[in-house]
Length: 367
Ligand SMILES: *Cc1c(COP(=O)(O)O)cnc(C)c1O
Image (cartoon, rainbow, N blue to C red; front, side, top):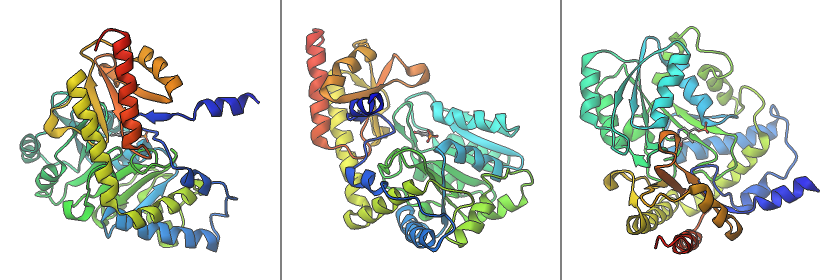
């Protein structure tokens, strides 16, 4: 069977910034009949999931689940919450994506720019907020194109001085790789996706929405239908989702959340931080880090390709050894490459990967 042999080929360790490897236990949880999404079985399933998600997001806000990738909810946040104008904090491709999404929906979006590889400076954001009113500020926590983890606490503190300005955080790749305390920071919308730190297969976007944000949405006329936050809220109260969800992914999510309850979020985050540390030390000896090290992310390491290695060739070398990494993102495509260390990867496997890259470098007489 051709399909099966393709699937066999995919049994490798993907050290990329999503999708990330998933534990077998989680994959197995999906191999059950999908239940009817308006049944009491679904209600029990979602009651448990919803409670655990509030615990995980450290919030009293509702945490909604959308069967989509994160981008759908990014766009929905803009449509649901911006009456006049958004401010997009941009220091990489994902920050830029927010502005693109706003504009393609006819929403005015100004920006504060920072150099690629540098962190977003809260003072510059403060200045912009002083100069005019914004309905929403969008901030990417970990900018997956540059490997910068923005100083979210300091940025949140600045935005919180403006009670009518909602803080929308793209925590898609930072979630579960570094602590995020939604209520302490006062985040109005915090978005992540199943295929990153949560270490589930792709297909779910998970996002908390504050009461304040829901009140705002109620005043926005054309906020769309399918991803209307108020519909999410109404169905949430029934322990349902507005439309048919990916039921089998919800099984996986339930099992994953129970696992996190047992092992603790701290342990998960420490594991990721340790791998990042290992990866950075290796990268500094062999290449150089792309981001300023003080703001280097724990989700992924973005490495300056100072040896001008061909990343496709490197990946060809790695494949039979059971590994794949990611090339640079957008304009950083050949200047950098990226090693993701989220999800069900271990330090042992990371070390084996780095050794394999060393073998490649030796073969090329670059080490
Ligand atoms: C992956 C990622 C996204 C996009 O997520 P999708 O689930 O592919 O839509 C957005 N922002 C950041 C920072 C990401 O890493």
